[in-house]
Amino acid sequence: MSTDQFDFDRSGWQHDHVETNGVRLHYVTQGEGPLVLLLHGFPEHWYSWRHQIAPLAEAGFRVVAPDMRGYNISDKPRRGYDIKNLTKDVRGLIRAFGEQSATIVGHDWGGVIAHQFPRDYPNACDRLIVLNAPLVRSWYWGRRNFPNNTYALMMQVPGLAERRSWSDIDETTRRVFQSVAADDDAFSAEDIDIFADALKQPGALSAAMRYYRNIYWPNWFLTWPDRNLRVTCPTQFIWGREDRAVRLPFMEEAAEYVDDLQQVIIDNAGHWVQQEQPAQVTAAMLEFLAPAAATAGPAS
Picture 1 (cartoon, rainbow, N blue to C red):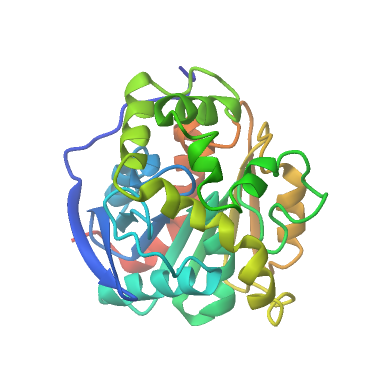
Picture 2: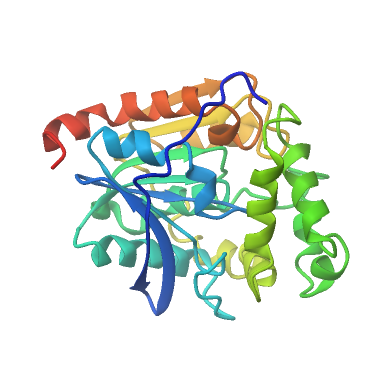
């Protein structure tokens, strides 16, 4: 177990569902105040933010961690996994909670969506936090990330990865989380079981892979017109230094398009940075978000 691990408080979590952009999404929420959306990646769900939900809520924020389209107990439509529709899901979430804007936080695929969101909806993004996630146009394209992109290439054939590398969901889930963590013991057996059980929901595994099946077509072409747009809202990048999947050069590339950027490198952390070193990550997030909490005043 990472020396930075600490217990998380489930007592304030509330589970519910919300309609957005034609899908029904499950979410966990806690707190009152400015809205903060926590977007998970692959092969996760809302539970990947278990360490951050309560501290952010206690700091004066309304925290919402959804199961993204296709994951866990959210709807799993056959279509709608291109990047523009995924940012539209997030825009719909903000409106569903009665707000016009929010702080967007994303890791892995959630981070890819978070990168794109202020480009698609600049007035709806108050602040942006991205953890170990590349720009959509640079992820797994060509030889740049070979051989780390081979698993994504396998996913391009519907059913192939499900039958081969993911035929044993329990074992593959354990291997995926341990393979790109800095510490093999960063996740408990219970954590792995929770993530694996979510992927066993009917249709969830194939739905999660549809995110990858949109990387080359149509995401590359959908984002061509806005490839040089800049992010102008206050932004924080948090990166696990030892990430072997989404390495530091991806952060450096994304930083070229951000006007107001704070970069935080977390030592002794791999790809699952907010779960491997939760205390450090949560502290960095709270420091970055302090001006928003101060502006909003005490939580009701």
